[in-house]
Length: 317
Image (cartoon, rainbow, N blue to C red; front, side):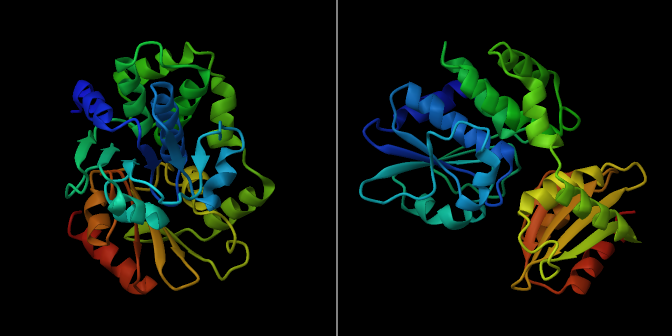
């Protein structure tokens, strides 16, 4: 559980004369991106100079969002504070990890289980649908702080991580969504942009995935960046957008998606529609997430990786 009054107190301990940088995990999804932008807007409205750090490679997701507080880099000319959102470890910050290490104070806010505390202050609740839901709940501590821009950002983050209110939804999630809707959020527009606006190219990729779905102990798909159909496709298009049409098929108990990157490393996603905890094996592979959904990045051959996951599943069947 998060004590939002204490979270508010820790935020207000940050000096208003000092810049606040906010960033989420690399290969950012909408929950990560919109939470960062929304919190930057909230802090700006209460007198801070705050920016959301978003990688240029993720800017394609922001063309329909408010981008006024987004920066892609920061010149370290003065001391600054750092807030890490939607990531249990600083290593997942990617190119922004150095800012975390150099910050005067650090705050971690997340809905994933964490293994060690790396921030000055840590606020985590793994039972909450999304980091956007956490930030929306925090906004209640600031009367009249919400507006259409912030509400739309937070609604989009919740839609993203719940797959349009399909997964990890609680009564509080629906209550928060209802609160946000009061600010004239266009829910149809948000859901379409977050989940539904598939291009013909993406449909071709999805078709390829279905045609290459394999089964041996669990269902999985192997993709290779050297195949030109995947070379320049963003991570989230493959792992969040296209794969979402596959991992909820009722015949799939465990689903894995593995992308062999150009450098030979592998980006992986695991989904469980049964009692097997995929977060446990993802942690063994250097990643993590939730019991039903987890990801990782690893430098290992694809066959040893598949065999390791098969062994893990067989031991728990």
